[in-house]
Image (cartoon, rainbow, N blue to C red; front, side, top):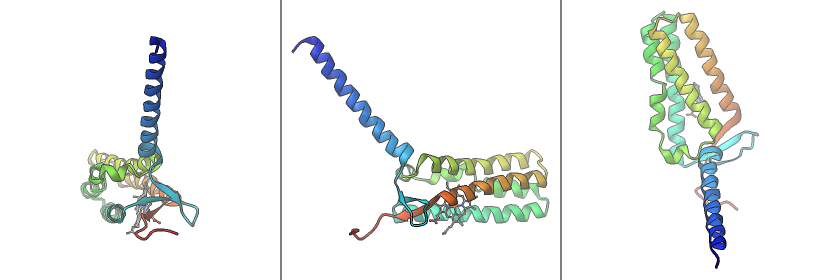
Length: 163
Ligand code: HEC
């Protein structure tokens, strides 16, 4: 075998490996684990425990919003900051990597933007934002909840084999 042929084979192997790596990266970072949902949305397919974790985080969003609106109604910006911080990005660190890899890139982007939005709201409240400004920010954040819910549903891996 000539040196040139060997080089070509090595190059071929490297290209094949890079394609495999790109494919794996695409699957885990961009595509996630999804299937069509009956209602036209995209269903993110999770293990039952992962679904429970996701829904628990969702309900914590509602708790945070309840506390936020209560604090806003009382013009208590310190309590606004505490409530907003509870729904901030620190929460997202609870999500295991295996579960993150099942979420499509757009889903992850929306989810992190929502958590970061709460952090930004907390920071602005600490810096003296008015309740009206906080309400405007909350309304923009709620738009992200609406956008994601319109696009995505959750499904679990079937426990019985599908026919
Ligand atoms: C990145 C996507 C995404 C964002 C952002 C998002 N959600 Fe969700 N949420 C979901 C999905 C997916 C479900 C499951 C819905 C389904 O299967 O029909 C869900 C479910 C819920 C549920 C039902 C919980 C349960 O126990 O059944 C609540 C409540 C909820 N979300 C509140 C919120 C609120 C409030 C926000 C914004 C502050 C928000 N979500 C932002 C994706 C999102």
